[in-house]
Image (cartoon, rainbow, N blue to C red; front, side, top):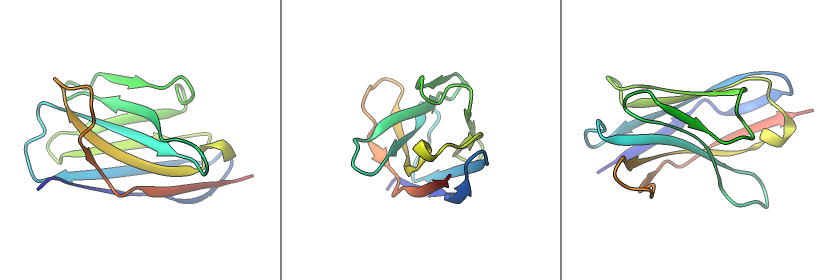
Length: 118
């Protein structure tokens, strides 16, 4: 059974940084894309970033330049480095995985809360 466990969220002041982690288990993820999404209060969940096994990355325009996604394939772990945090980054951050042959993310973590104070 696939499990995704996020960690690293918390309360931080605007301008600060956080590093989120997501450890995946339950199968081999060599052909899987690992991604991060977020959902702010009262808003729909939105795509943040994704990384392929090869290390190729994609970002939403709203986070490009401040967020960095990476993965450690040996540890089945994906990271999200968030710099220059803004109050509008406040959200629950979710990691997810999908097969590289699919456009749909099929496995999701439980989420980790990031709160940015002004």
